Image 1 (tube, rainbow, N blue to C red):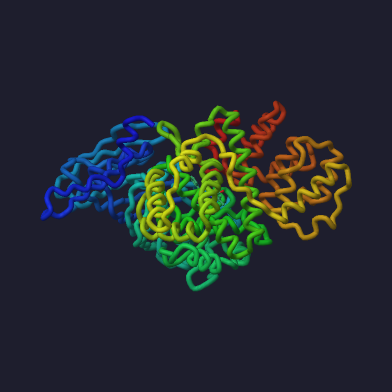
Image 2 (image 1 turned 90 degrees about the horizontal axis):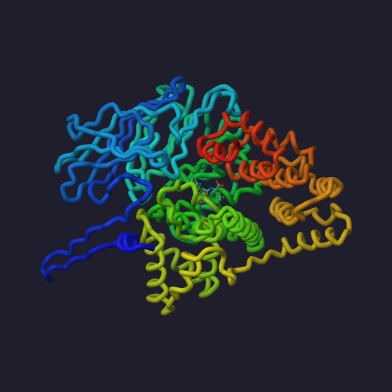
Length: 620
Ligand code: BES
Ligand code: ZN
């Protein structure tokens, strides 16, 4: 850490008491976010009123973003982030036009939008149009939807793509409330990360309100032929009409998850919790847009085996949406806490052994990730606290933030007991609600909590070992799953050349099968591939996790039977977590590279920017 960063690490700053009679003056000094041009210490946004209209023909959103602002001192300007937006006009409070210009520009960050303001300025309105290639937006043709009749639009703002559809101070350290009025084609429904309609209306104009302050990466919009089905009085599911019943069945435990989460760490702060199942090109498994999680249809496994993903996105309603990472360098605070919370929800609903299966799979993924980051000369990225300055925040989206983060928190839980850790977490979420937190702030908070409440001094060396040290500490917690031990026995017996037989696996769930697949020997003969395939019937699986795991093994071992299935999966699915292992396995050989390229050429039109941005660099 250099001097500059250390000085900048002061989050809660100077409390100056000049003399006893004067009121205390507090100035919150925010640490500089390397991924935003905004200067919130001078002028920052507090509320957005967004008015927009969505045009599928031109693939453009035309809008006005009216921002309420607060100034400190007399900065003369307010700075926003923008990426590819055509700005027509900027006005101040009473429609008075003001001067604006584009300052710095850069491939990753986009453009610095500088707007002149007066000391008394309270609002800034920006009239603009998005670019057809706006990175957050994916415009799908009717053909790319389940119903094949209507087009679809969805946004993905995390990490720094909100700026490509709303001029904003696009930093997770800044929170604002919002309202919106959005006009869409009359056949379609519009939904946002806000209060939502449950059915279409005749005008095609929808109003939204988000009363709780959020960060810009949680701005979200989906427009399509979607219907709604309730699950409880505060939750439900949106999906294309042909999928809505399937989705409601898959997420039947949603209310139990919300109630379980509340029992653990305090009341749900966002009123409703709904999920929308998007078309398959959605680049993530899920995205925790407040009040409305965006989800991939690849979790509709038909057996409810992949619903921990919903528990994960729900958990973000506390870790992330309530207490938000200050910058993307602190991303593990969002994801590590969420994996911990997700695992606890799953344990509460389905028992310890279920949760331990998830934790074991996570540990294996984490070890693999560390190995591949080391091999790619990216060992520094195996620390929890990242330094992503000058790089895309996307580079921080690895199993380090998620699973090393999880194991770090679990190690504190195990060291001093679950009751204490739960009390800490509840207090952490309550006391820091609707604020941002950085790694230093977390360390200070937990240290003083354990000291004050339990008289326990958490050691600096423990934090350092996890947060600023590469790799995984040797004394990390060890998950233990009796169900996986049985799988290990089957694997051992097979490796000792005893045949596989169906009675060994008759009550295995998706998780056991995944554990089995991930622990097969690296290379297998054609005969062994066939034996394994007939044991698990993997080539006929409709489960996206299994298709991916088995697909990788099939590519590695030239098991041609899976080729057509892999190809159609890659063309029809846009979830990066599945595309990466499959393409990466192909890229290991020359033949494979040719094959990857041929498939990618066909599949690319179906992918979101988040995916093409990853694979364009790899598949040439
Ligand atoms: N917030 C993330 C998705 C994300 C991370 C988007 C970084 C953009 C940048 C979301 O909560 C998430 O972690 N999704 C996971 C699912 C999960 C069960 C690990 C995914 O999409 O695979
Ligand atoms: Zn997450």
